[in-house]
Image (cartoon, rainbow, N blue to C red; front, side, top):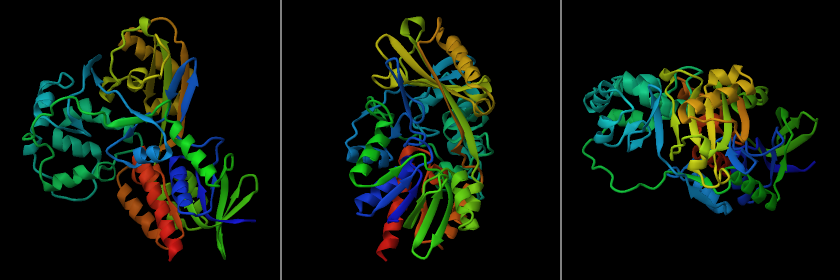
Length: 449
């Protein structure tokens, strides 16, 4: 049996990016993926002229790893069209201009936005006068935002902006794990700086997407890996991992064994914990402690003439508004070519608690009901699909930085083993790809010693 230089477990974007880095460095690589497809949560559905991204549909440009990978692979990208709304009292209002994360960039839009009551706007604007917290230990994102900006701003603006990205269904989310730059900025003083001049002109979109669908990125990565001679094996769930005199081995459910000098694990946290527990429980324990949330989206394509569709990228629904929907993306307005002429395509995000309990028909009914209320949609859809992710979204709950510190300490005892993926230090594609590249580099460094 041929022993590879590196065995990569997991064929999501983390595994693909790491394998590409290793192959480009001249290492022999074998990759095992449990499912029948590569790309992980990056997935695009096509049918009836619609192109629907059911996982991430954009990547952030100011974090360059995803954009750089797309350019290196020759994947053409286009900016996403912006302009988002937020629901208040059952009505949709524009988001305040100049938001950067949860921090408004300018005073005027914050004070005049109808998305928040006047009292909430005034309290948020007073953030520069809030004394910084004395303690430096971890704090929940909610407590941090309420302390700095007030309860009204949290419930009406910040929670819907960040809740879908980081989730709070598994417990309080760590601000140090999700927004460490804001924690650091508070140590230096206020977060808001009203002395900055208002931005002039239309800003470039901060988001990009591969032309034709997000799945173009993992597809191009897989093609590049095959061209470099990398063995990509799907439908190969790993049941056990161990070591021998020359490195590592992994046994699949079919009884096949793969051997390599080094091992890079890019599996979801529960799967990684399960296969690594016999090798080193100290590695498995922090991974097993990462909560995993559920997610579900319903895709609805419809004739444009049957609804009053705003020319925006979508809208957010604060939890205090009630209902089963937390956000809607109008993919057809956000990305050219997502819907055929005369049609629109909406991606409706359902709340995690509903995603865990409801059937596909119930999820679709909830999405249709919301679109009828918000857009006046009448008649039946021309395209529908439901995608659910069970225990697939890592939640960076309080204590996540400490868990990662424990993981790093355990991995230090295994220089030829490393991990990558969204469960560690960033849920967006740029962070995942950057982390995977760094993980690959650590193995290359260990091989060179």
